[in-house]
Image (cartoon, rainbow, N blue to C red; front, side, top):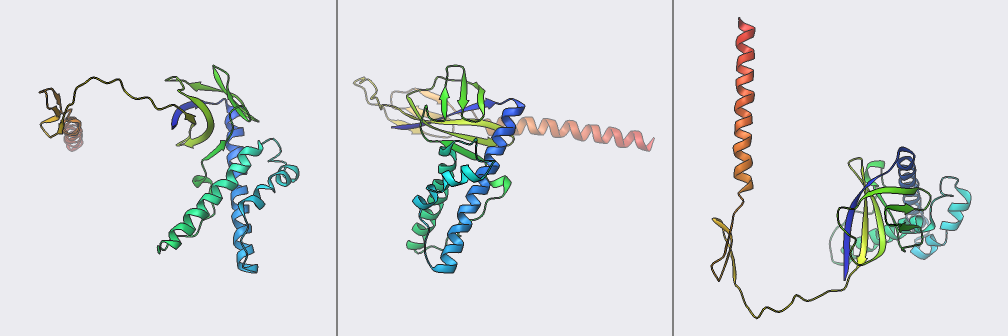
Length: 232
């Protein structure tokens, strides 16, 4: 069974610059591969396969100075992401839908890259996350990593960075209790079980509404006081 765990990253300024540079190189590579697919089909009526573009990763690393220090798995992952976008496009076409053709990525629409093999490009050394070409990044390990880490996806979200680990974990059955309980979900009580146990409804919405009304009254009083002072 696969399980994804997300942890906050705290890169140094130089590391963040490398992360952003990796994203930008990946974005340009994604757009270049999309352009090749589109041009080849429009001009020759032929498709470019994922395998053909994967084979060009070595060529990109050799010719593009910005890609030299980027791990091959990152650039291969970009090709595979584009392949998944085309697979989804053709699947929807086959289903009779009218999907949009895969689009070129702007800077604010390309926000992640990944490594596909633990120990090859990335590794958790017990304290920090080591990324090829970027260095050892501080991580907030708010909970243990369960299972065997297989892949990682580095994500930029609202100016913050996260590591999303995909882990293989073994499914385990809960111990048998010999009891059966029915559960009813309601409004007055969030949960009521068949043996009489009740879990009260937290009523978050109503509580927040009360707080909002109090704040609105405070703001209104301040505005009225300010207006009176101005007239005087």
